[in-house]
Length: 224
Figure 1: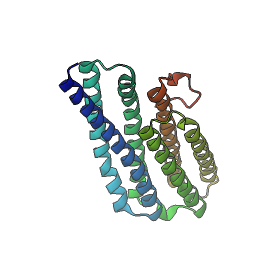
Figure 2 (figure 1 turned 30 degrees about the horizontal axis):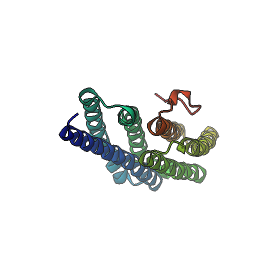
Figure 3 (figure 1 turned 60 degrees about the horizontal axis):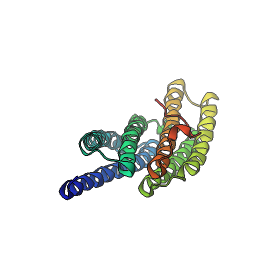
Figure 4 (figure 1 turned 135 degrees about the horizontal axis):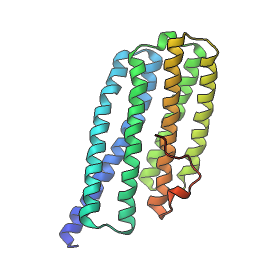
């Protein structure tokens, strides 16, 4: 590969990396905003988060297009190939996570806040806080190519799972009407799946950093 081609190749890698970093920020910030909108009853804020999912989808398509082009045309090897293959696995997780954030925000836009009990509100607030911190950790793991981040993120995901179990039990107690219970059961599931996606991204970091096959990891399998 000529010097000019190598320069162009690395510029493209930098562009891909920047877009992926932006996707992490959109998911993390969107989750915080969706949680706030849901609990405050701010319908306009909820709609604004829903609209931002368009940006996530556009970035996802752009990253996938660029990455596939570089794999096909440049014949990358070693660390460069691992990076590109990891991006192809990571960006679908980010796109699906953006969809989950949108689903939470859509419930905020429907104005569920007034019908939630203090217990449910407290659990959702905790799930939002843990979820945002978990996604910040995942973003840091990506940015630093941290192969050891998976276990830390998995521990936070366990906390999120426990909160989800508590929320499910509270909903099942009959403390809210059936329509609200159905919506909040979905919301709890959205937070739980967001945690799973962050864990799966952390799995990829071992491969990106060290070439370790993530299929050998004991971390959670990729959710649908």
